[in-house]
Length: 215
Ligand SMILES: C[S@@+](CC[C@H](N)C(=O)[O-])C[C@H]1O[C@@H](n2cnc3c(N)ncnc32)[C@H](O)[C@@H]1O
Image 1 (spheres, rainbow, N blue to C red):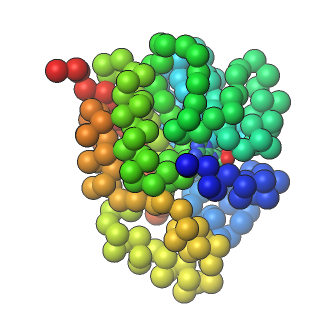
Image 2 (cartoon, helix red, strand yellow):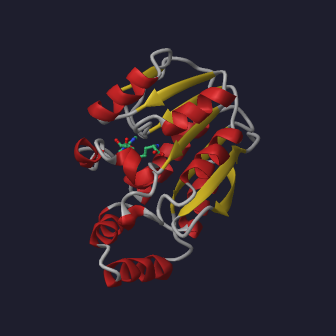
Image 3 (tube, protein in one colour):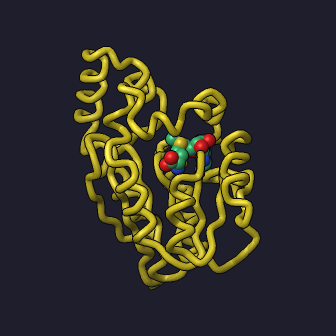
C-alpha cells in the first residue's frame, strides 16, 4: 500500500541528482526551479519535522538549516542509505507516507517534495487524517508535488509529453496517482486543514496546510 513504486528508485538512484539538475531533457520541466521549490518547503516549517521520501537528501539538507530536528522516512533501501550516510546525525527510518513509527509525540510539521503522488486519492485522505492526529493546532503539512488544475489539464499535459516524444514522463503521469487541486483541497479540508496552493512550475505546486483549531 503506497509502496508500489519504490523499486523504480533502485534504478533512478544512480542518476537522480543529474535529473533534478536538469540533465535529463524529459524531466527538465518537472524539476525546473528545483532548488527554489525545496527552499520554499523548508522556509515554511520549523521545530521538529518529519520528512517523507528523503530520496538523496536534498530537501533534508535545506530542513537542517531551518529546523531543530528532522526525522526522515524513506521506504527505498538505497535512497535511505544515501540520506543516512549524507546526514549521520539524523534518523532516517524505514517507513512510508502511511506506515511509519517515529516514536515521539511532539511533531510541528510534516513535509515532502515529489512524493505525495505515490498514494491513491483515498490513501492521501487516510494519510492526512493520520497527520492531523499527530500535529498540534496550527501544525503544518507542506508538500511540493506534481498536481493539475483539472483532469483535462492532466490529459493535455500527457498528450503534450507524448507529442514531443517524452514517453517516460507521459508513462509516469499515467502510472502514478497525480491528482487535481479540487480533490486535494477537499482531502485536506476533510482532514481538518486549511490549505493554499502556489504554482512553482508547469508541473509542481506547493501545498501549504495548517491544522485547524479543534472544535
Ligand atoms: C522523486 S523522489 C523525491 C526525493 C526528494 N524528496 C526530492 O525532492 O528530491 C521520491 C522519493 O519518494 C520515495 N517514495 C516512494 N513511495 C513512497 C511512499 N509511499 N512513502 C514515502 N516515500 C516514498 C522514493 O523512494 C523516493 O526516494
